[in-house]
Length: 154
Image 1 (cartoon, helix red, strand yellow):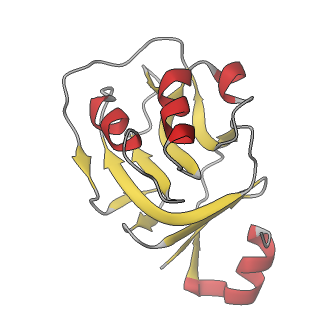
Image 2 (cartoon, helix red, strand yellow; image 1 turned 180 degrees about the vertical axis):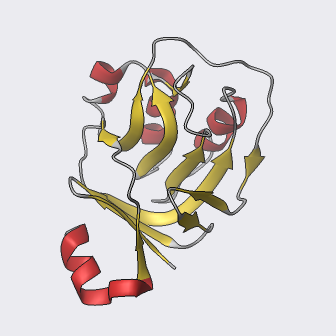
């Protein structure tokens, strides 16, 4: 994979650069793929349902409203992503089970960690356009992530 810095140098403003300082948690530090999206707040039922379906090399972008109050993904849900062929998950929120996730062949970026699990009410939206960090995440657009950050096609 071409580095995000080189991609930005090549394509400039055709790419959006996410200014949030996400941490890398997965066993894969560089990943890319077409975007699928979930919007949810402190409730990971919809996220889990989507990661239980074939990912076909996609990257799931989750807008958890930047909440640090609960984790939206733990090792069991991350394993679903691995088993179903997802390339990575980018979460505007937190994860838990970070040590176990760090051993998995999955790209994972998130704001941080919290051992507290999320609610299980089933609220959320799938494949909607998301905006956080002044970046627009459209389903189907390509996302590239590595140690330097995240860039997304406009």
